[in-house]
Image (tube, rainbow, N blue to C red; front, top):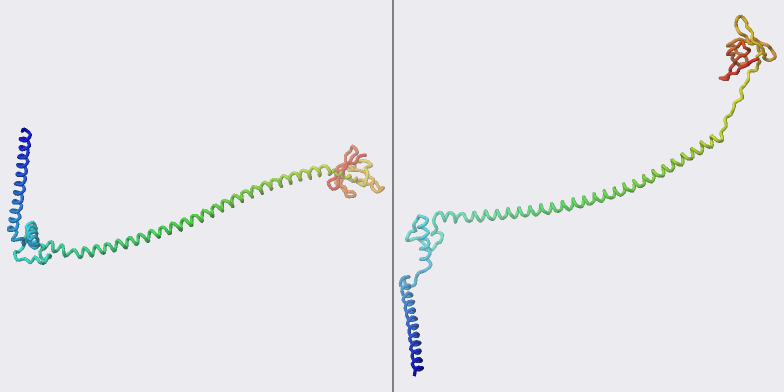
Length: 252
């Protein structure tokens, strides 16, 4: 009995919940319908076109720019709807486009000049690298040649020193042999062809009495006999005679 009462109570709660949801959906549909009908009548039967939107937009802008748009203005031409300042700005657009085009041409020309200069610099760098490499090779070759020449000069110097030592040794040997083999040659003194016989005084002067070619002759100082000069006569019984830087002393 209690179970049946509970089941009936639950069925009543479910049916009341469904009834409230259905009522809420109906109220929402009615509200949407009423709103759509009111919007339709407000917009003039739905004929709110694009020109009306443009006009309203221009009117709002014109109020901001402090000028009014005439009521009979032709809204079919967009340019006629602009303000004078905006028309002036719009008329300057072609000049700006032309200036932009010229600027683009100048930029392109400058870019071409830059590329040409870059290529020229690259070519110059390559040429300088080639020239520098050639110069370095030449310097390396000169350095090698200089080292070879220095080596040859060193070798020639050693050979010259060896030859010099050999020449000195030969000269020493020749000198030694010359001293060993050479003997002094004694020259025989030549004697005068006369002989002292006596010493006398004649007129207070000493006179030498000599025998020459089996004849006795008296001769004084500074006289010449048989190409011999009488240098001195001594009372001790001697006399000195000379011939060709040879001096001979004759005595009794």
